[in-house]
Image (cartoon, rainbow, N blue to C red; front, side, top):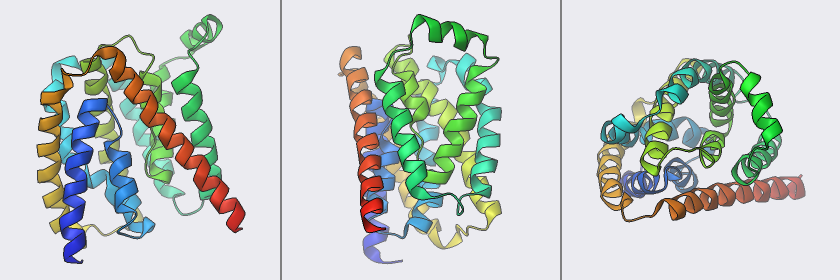
Length: 248
């Protein structure tokens, strides 16, 4: 491991922790995008969830009383199944296909509010957030980051503290399940322990700074910020799809 990697990745995690707390999402994506410039993608995807783990734990501790457990609790068992399935086929699915489907789903859930008919149908689905947890975690495991759940939370009636808390609570469990899945699939985390520990320290610092700045952001702009981040991520996915198709 080079000194550059050892220094830059914790700095990246500081910025990611700050942004995840301020916007409710984006820290994991930022960390994934930046570390992919420094490390092979085969290392970046399994490592990403571990690098941001301490920041997620810190956010849960900070906003624990705002977590909506009606969403989080059914999400957890779905997340276990999604992580298991994703880890099993991580190296088998075409990356281009996953990127295209994920980009379409993100834009749909972020910008198209559910109609009255859709709400009636959704109300008939037993434990809807179980299925959200399964699909989101599966996509996150095979592609490195999901964002499906966050894009749905844009339309929730929770206050911004509730959005941040519920996303942090659900995705903390998801990160643990994903990391365990990669570990059992054969990924070795031991060579990366120094950068993991430093990233945890910096991630905690970034998260604490983000909490201090959260109240400065009005709720309306908070939701616009979430939509903007999700949209940029979806457009990046489409760009990768186009680049891969042109290269093939």
